[in-house]
Image 1: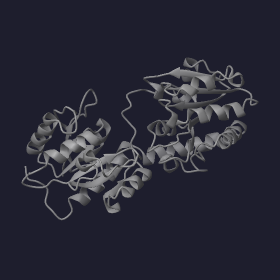
Image 2: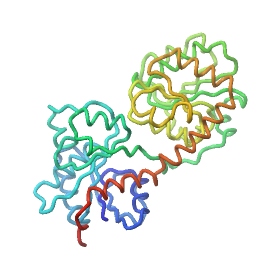
Image 3: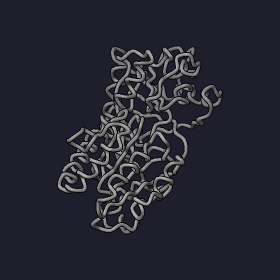
Image 4: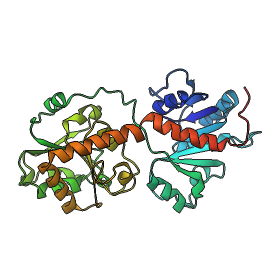
Length: 355
């Protein structure tokens, strides 16, 4: 089977190429280039109806003669849809969608992307994403949950001791971490308000990594009840390597498809605590891999923090289960296997294209 990917991560391309009996042609940008034996083709990800990338995709189809085209995200998908117009043979197109926002059927650009009749199947980052597509009128049988994948982060995680030393954290402190660009939708304010309700707990630290894009966050972090307890680190280009410093990873999002930072924390064996927004409750099985609390419920999150502060054995059990789940369910190999099933279904009943 020949697969042409447009805008895919190198980890996806490499994992697909390792599946066996699969030839992968990749149109990627920047430094994230796949390794051999993936065939790399030029691609400039410009506007959805920009002629240059559309011509590049059309030339790639002529050269690679793919059985399936997998376009990741809206612009590559539009380029694939427009490039396949008037081809002699219709090539199945698979999309990838990673947001839960509602598709607007009246918007013309949706009809050259996710609502285009030329798109045969949709790979969804979570069940919540799938539900949003179905709600927009996309047939449910075309929507497949594949989740996102880890791997290829490009960093070597530090040990717990080294990570804590770099962040100036005591070895015996309970460290609660959040990694995100802190927009209001990410719910960092919920975490800080819960931290205020736990101000009586001894030896607990809150480390929030990422750009602060919500004006409330710095104000909340400066509250006297949180004095000496909160560290706003700002953007950290290698935040993943410091994950081992944490005992608890909190993602209190108000809306979320599936958060890669949560998957990274799970892979590092850190106990996840997430809101029940979107795909978060799919990634973390409540009471098995970690704890899921109601979206926006400050009191519930505070109670979770109190529970975990008092029970380090529970912390370790959740962390171990989360790590096992992440490695089994969200590895690049697992995601590639699910994608390959979709491709095979799309090609069912017809011969692959000849060389």
